[in-house]
Amino acid sequence: MLSREGAAAVVRSVANRGLLIGGDRVASPSEGWLPHLDPATGEHHADVPLAGPAEIDAAVEAARSSLPVWQGTPLERRIEILHRLADLVVEQGEECNAINALDNGSPVAVLDSAAYSAQFIRYYAGWIDKLDGRTVPVYAPETFDYVVPEPWGVVGAIPPWNGPMMGMAQKAVAALAAGNTVVAKPPEVAPFGAIRFAELALEAGLPPGVLNVTPGGPVAGEALVRHPGVDKVSFTGGTATARSIVAAAADTLKPLALELGGKTANIVFPDADIDSAAGGAAFMGVCVLSGQGCALPTRLYVHDEVYDQVVERVVAQLETTRVGDPLLPDTMMGPVVNGRALERIIGVIDRARSEGSGKLLTGGHRLQLEGDLAGGYFIAPTVFGDVDHESELARNEIFGPVLSILRFSTEDEAVAKANDSPYGLSAMVHTRDLPRAQRMVRRLQAGTVIVNTYAGGTPTAPFGGYKRSGFGREGGRAGIDEFLQLKNVVVGG
Ligand code: NAD
Image (tube, rainbow, N blue to C red; front, side):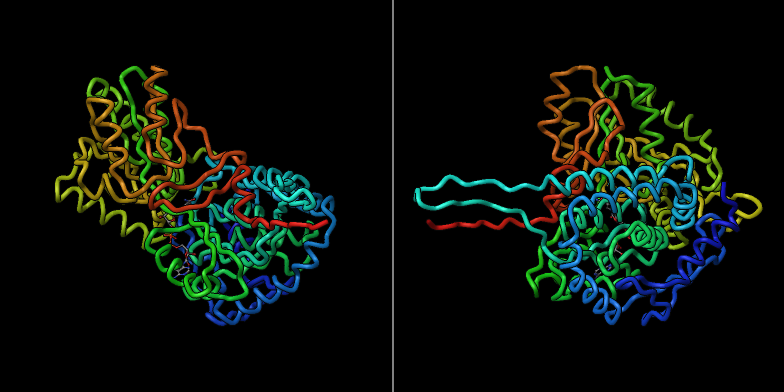
């Protein structure tokens, strides 16, 4: 296990090597350096190099000029390179997961982000030699008509801070597997995993310039979206930023894939396996990523008949959850990503308390740990019960370890409340009544509906939003199609 000092030294050296453009390192970024604080200690441990428009230009140029190189690389070699990348990520899994923990506070024991990233890489690598086209029936018998999938060209990828390495595996690798080259702009909030990922890709044999990494903030993001040399942008982030991105993309009419926020309704009927439903509700709704995940079940709707039972189990579990150092093997919940997030989340909790939007059942405050962790951004696992469906708690994405529990008494009421949200990323249902489960699946407006489990998020399945949770998909056949366009060819006699 890497010590905190060891992990910080790795993060520092990754950061100090700077941006990665066309195989070269750029350690004098035009937007300067941003201090990064370890979320678990609040201590300064590295500085983030910030790209600006100049570096985005250079990265796009590198990606464009490497298009013929990548597209001319034999399929079996492309597959081999991506598999080698997956091997490297797994071989260096301990270090990769420690980088992730220092990037955003995510506990190494909860999420093996290296293994998960490797799964995505291998899955997409498998598509490389299977992207066939099709023939088209013809009205004129002397013609031959067919359709071939082709890459867009240069893809701009903006992965999220809550899964820095996974975001690269989900977006950038899918784009590469489809034959595109990539400029990735990881967020300034948590860039280290993404930079390291690109370093490992180079080591795996990816030709220089095929994957460029330019961490930065809104300036770099907007430059990437506006750039006329970028053919498609895949963005993961918040709805407000997505509006700016749609506006910036309008100039070049750039196609977009948008993976945005969510407010997953998790619906528990009286005939459900209550232990499993409640246990997962607590762990997935609060502990995983400290609630900082787009598809986490943060709105728990419980039928009146089992409301007290479920609430009691959820609260009991969260009051014994080990919150602490994300690098330790028994930590189940880490800090939130930074001080700004901590203040924002505590603000939501305080407003809910003063407005009486729900009954605070546990938590509700900053968690003051001892020793090295005294300055860390920890929040006690927090649960509000009997939450008002119209309140900020129930309606807005909190992106913190705060679970809202609401009541319902009929199936129609559960559906109406679950769907009464601008978001539609995912929904969950717990019931042993199969016809009811099927009715719920049909009626819930979400890109993913999960029944009687908390599993999901595999590389093989399409993930993405309905409504304002965005459009486009990651994973599955749809995830690779996102980075292909279709060319129709008609050949005369
Ligand atoms: P954010 O929207 O504030 O920032 C996301 C990224 O956009 C950052 O890299 C930022 O630098 C960049 N950016 C900011 N302004 C920009 C602009 N004008 N043009 C281009 N880029 C710009 O999001 P956040 O707070 O960092 O992340 C949390 C949000 O992301 C939540 O809403 C969450 O639900 C969502 N999210 C969605 C998924 C998903 O797969 N659907 C996954 C993780 C997170």
